[in-house]
Length: 315
Image 1 (cartoon, rainbow, N blue to C red):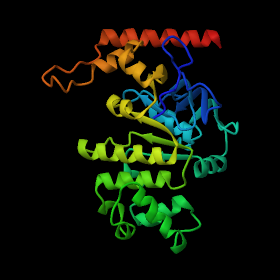
Image 2: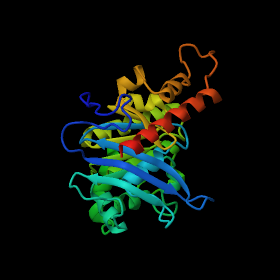
Image 3: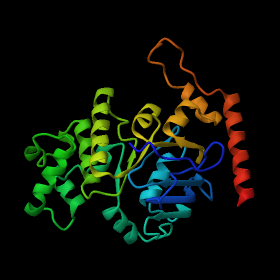
């Protein structure tokens, strides 16, 4: 893990990113609107700025609806293809090409060479009527799905800790356990050795024991490849154990960023403080779970609104 990541932003570090060399990927003032019943839709991401250096691991945490998954999909060009989905701001990879407004072909090219994505529900993202081997083969090269690529498929499946891979390649997703399906998704994501891996709640549907094994697999794969990682989760323990830096999202904004140690041991933003207080204690399991009361929720909303006005003023 890169322990030399630094913070380069406001007092709470909102929107901060790794300093130093040119980033592998950088988002600046990213804004995303999604369609709803309202005429203009809803703004799911508000002026998010994020930098990820080569080989760095960055966590994005927040409650459901905070905008973290939408941010991850924007970084990978996987937002819904709907004319009412609107993206503004900037997303640039190391070569400097602007990806906001890029064509589907350009994004496909980026994903085929640079970005791998791991989703939270394997049954949704694995083709139920296609054998596992063929799905991994397509991720390596969609034009080569037969014998020439078979050895590569077996190798990448073994890389993520799967066994009896000669048999596994001929099975369908529904024939595998949840943990095995998630490992297959990791295999598909790393098959082309991407520069950046984005993992969106990769262990949400798994029990604690399987979760630990899958996270260990992900950790090992990232270390072997030397790839950068953006880990998206509501679970502070998961993110805290695997990342160099953390960005905390609330209401579509990054409200605090810093090194993992800084954010978890000395949080500055009231939302981050509340989020940490809501984590159940393992040493005192009888302690009542703490939730964010309406009064504090209003305080946090006011805090975020004030930051938004300051952003607009600076712009």
